[in-house]
Length: 389
Image (cartoon, rainbow, N blue to C red; front, side, top):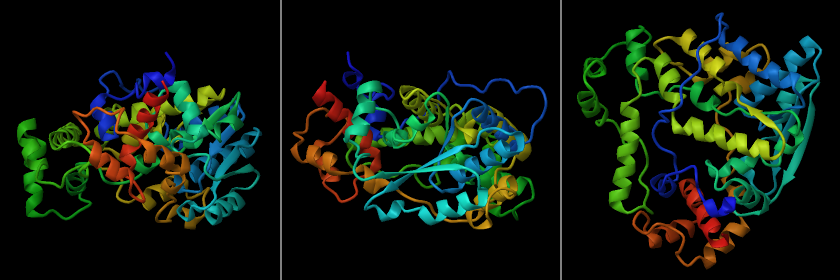
């Protein structure tokens, strides 16, 4: 059976319909911390140094804060230890203004200095059903997230070596954890309010009580109009259950909840498969166990107050200030919903989806829009795989 025939083997039928992997992986746990207590920066450098020593060391370099930090630290280590410099590879998207990052990239490369930099021009090649993505589907089945093939033009530069990504940086460096507010109050970084007493009592109560308090918050995921109502409700319930399981202390949330989430584990698996298909290993300094253990130890109960403050704390010596504090980042949706996808959707007859989960007419209406919901992308690719198997 071909990989395409296997379809979205990483995802359950419900996850495929929802377009997101859900819950925790009970088999995923962080390995024991190694002897010694490296700082988060030292742990980050350990991951990067290993990639440099088993080169070529290639950085998937978008120009955002995370990939810039990876590149800058790699360049610093290479100069300091006489290793071959890292190779930065950036994709340049023709006709997608929202993906334009040239100025940011040039600023970082000039500041870092001494790196080899390749810029790969991309037009429609990364279409969700274009030649690059469908080749990966045929090799591995539908990978999640559906834009994993973004790294396919970059991975060949790392053949025989290691591809470094910034995966995990957005989440681990930013606030937004379920109990951020309470932890700030308990560590005296925020002035308490009457409502905090309810949160405090809930945090120490059985799960049923905690759930009632958490349910007063906004829904953790946007509605999915292409799902049947009862299925959408089930997906929302899965999101609430995941939020309910997040430990109150930030360090425990990182070590026990973030790492074991299917979001982390399936993404790591997908990027590993893609890189291996091009003869390379892959590493994620922001999502390496050593870095997570060090970050958890340094932060303790309370999570990061601000994305920029945390980036400055770890990387102020290697990145220009404009990069450290920048707001916003490139978006690439326009590069993925391209001519091959539009042509396939135009002739789609409604087959290839589970009609008990998906409202075909609403899905068709979603795909007919100018910028269809990215959560439907895995479903699109699985429909394609079903048609070609």
